[in-house]
Amino acid sequence: MKNAENTRGRVMMIVAPVVVYAILIFLSFLCLFSFYMLIINATRSNAQLQAGFTLLPKDNFFNNLRNAWSDQSINIPRGMLNSFFIAACSAVLTTYFSALTAYGIHAYQFKLKRAAFLFIMAVMMIPPQVSAVGFIQLVYKFHLTNNYIPLILPSIAAPVVFFYMKQYLESVLPMEMVEAARMDGSSEFRTFNQIVLPIMKPAIAVQMIFSFVGSWNNYFIPALLLDKAEMKTVPIMIAQLRSADYSKFDMGKVYMFILLAILPVLIVYIFLSRAIIKGVTAGSVKG
Amino acid sequence: MDEKLKTKRKGVSYAKWGYIFILPFFVAYIIFTLTPQIMTFYNSFFENYRSGLKQIGPNFVGLQNYVSLFSPDKTGTVGMLKYFGNTMILWLMGAVPQIVVALLLAVFFTSYRLNIKGQQFFKTVIYMPNLIMAAAFSMLFFTLFSTVGPVNQVLLAHGIVEQSVNFLGIKISVRLLISLMNFLMWFGNTTILLMAGIQGIDQNMFEAAEIDGANSLQVFFRVTMPLLAPILVYTIITAMIGGLQMYDHHGDDRRPADVRRPSGADQRQGHARPRQHDHGHVSEQLSGHQQELRHGRRDQRGAVHRLGGAEPVRVQLAVQAV
Image (spheres, rainbow over the protein chains, first blue to last red):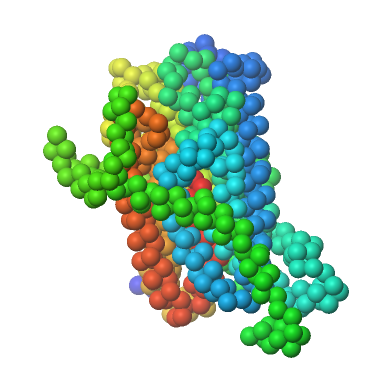
């Protein structure tokens, strides 16, 4: 009896890891395969793509790149520039003002402190789509369509980022430091900018990456507000491709468009994946 | 408290700085989020649409929009129920496998018995699709599965099908594709959150179970699952909100969120609104329920406390990805 159990245990010891690795490899394959196909197909010309399916790259990468880059109807370099501008501005505003709000609530005692905090926590869960229709109407009323202001300024109020920053401040900021700065005659703003912000660098970096990526990928609101060709962002251009009859397109070029759209994020991710993955759960395992 | 005493003693109040520092946030929030929310709600009581070239409204119609959403149209289907049903189907197809797989992976990664090699690699790979632009990701799937795409080429070449299959024209395959995309984009994120949840559980629990002779399955169902329940419920709810918010993946005719360009002809704006609102309402209610659950358990379980930090990011990602 005991012997049988032992053998079973031993069999499990060998079989379990094999099964586990098989599952992991299968899922990784699923995740990577579509990207692999994308990269391979971006190296093939339209004729080669029509000829059939292959797993090996061809030599038309730069050809496709040139075609995609200089396309008349879909101005991808312009789109990337637009997207970059919006994403960078939003990332800076989101992180700076979230940190400022978090510090304001964390470091000062005032009457509405608790009310303000509870309000932000309460609205955190409301999905952005709820306000979308009203937001679009507001933008139309102020004639701000085809303008980046409604895409950038709202990022000042990001409840989720605020909460993250507040959690972080609670764990890292010693109030003695703020007191010491005050003693030395530093103004409150200066204390925040020169002492608190540098301490919060890791949290700011993580949130900057997330908000940059989020803004870069954002399709919903920009698609409703931007219709001038030279104002459009990358996701709108990609979605445009889909709604066109793309079977008539140069498919090599289409794959190259998609590759260009995801490339910046992909590169950032490859270099910072460790920090990003940690950032997803930061705060949860700090204890 | 301590702080308060100190400031009192020094006779300098810094309270006004608190207000100054949080002011920009609230100004931006009121202008760009709160006002639109109220406007959305307010407009849901008006009819306001274009019929051909003629602008109708805005006229106050009371609850008419809500009524017509929930009453059958010419063909006898109730619009709201149909949209809701469609969304639920997509959600079930996407979220259920996502959570099951994520739970399994989270257990694998945290098991010291398995001690998986190359964890960082696997984590990096499974999280990657989450950061990719949804529009680009779905465009990629559209091209791969189009009638002239590689998938059809392979199927034709091997004689599995005789004519290329229009995957994007068949209801069930469209749903499967959307669910697959949703799954690929989100299971990595859920895995990492659940992993953090498991790591937050007191290690002694697992050791005690081990000493008492529990096998892996027993440990999973008797120790891991109950202690993970709060964060698990949380991921289920956010996956659901994510499902309700799926937008980027869908072609114009299949989108679940029925918000359209305000300037479009013949589009009854009034209709889009109550649905919008209702949709948000569902999300809010669910989240509220979840909040309750979390708070209820907070005092009993230290682990939940530590998970606090993980949640906003999950929410943020959920929000960003749509």
